[in-house]
Length: 96
Image 1: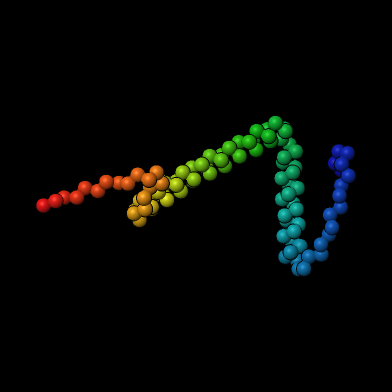
Image 2 (image 1 turned 30 degrees about the vertical axis):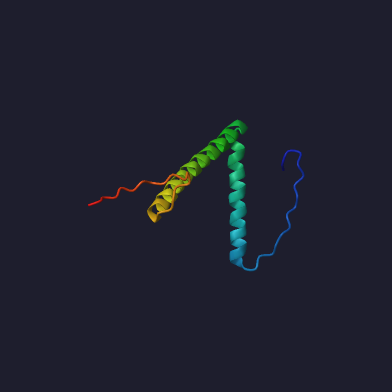
């Protein structure tokens, strides 16, 4: 029983076959296991851990965006498209 919270009864969906029932029970077991582990950790720890995970995700996103921009600029340069700044590259021509 939870502290002061009434438990909402979930609608039981009759599984179509035994494999569906197995998977549904395994998913619920993993969800409850996660909740059990989370309840063992102090709230501040969970808050800081979640913040750390979000910062790590943001750092990877920034890295991938930077790599993607670099690759796109390189591909554009190789294809001969002008740069976004409007600067044109000078080409040296040898005259005989």
